[in-house]
Image 1 (spheres, rainbow, N blue to C red):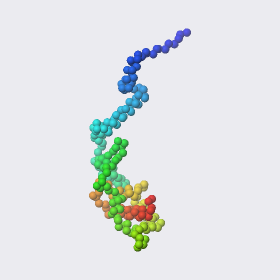
Image 2: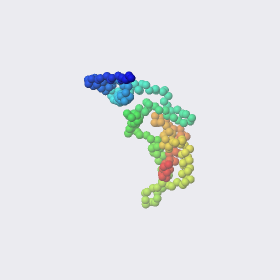
Image 3: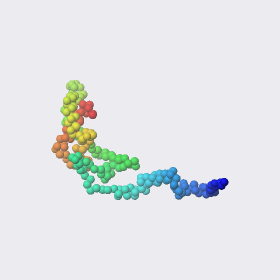
Image 4: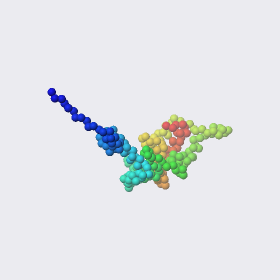
Length: 212
């Protein structure tokens, strides 16, 4: 009966074992081992990320900027009667920047922080005088007039007719006022009427303690 003979493994000298180990660590060895291949890919990703966000990687960021598509029409357009402001990278870079995590950070402008809600409050100060009454001649404390349930229902119905589904009052006021780049353009008479009415209704509800 014949015996099965298995081939003997190749004897590795102590010096050759050290050389093979160095080759693998340097990445010059065979990367068929999934663990080594994954480690090498992770190392390359980290290296690319570091180059992107360092002084040496500014050229790569410029290449990304050149690869961006610049559309001729970046103005607002209307789709099914809804005014839509498209995403504009040039405008976003003027108003802020993207950090290393991809989050947009807006520049702080101490000279002119504009907000549609606060602008409307300043413009419609005359409405505040109608909503307050003095309790008595000796006390200067003022309280808001209580709205009846019927008045609240009328105001909320009027606000609901202006808002789009899922839209807040602040978002509606900003939409009526228009984008910040078109501040010089005046609102039409009808748009201003809706803007003022929505502001007045929202203020009355807030003064009545209704923030819903």
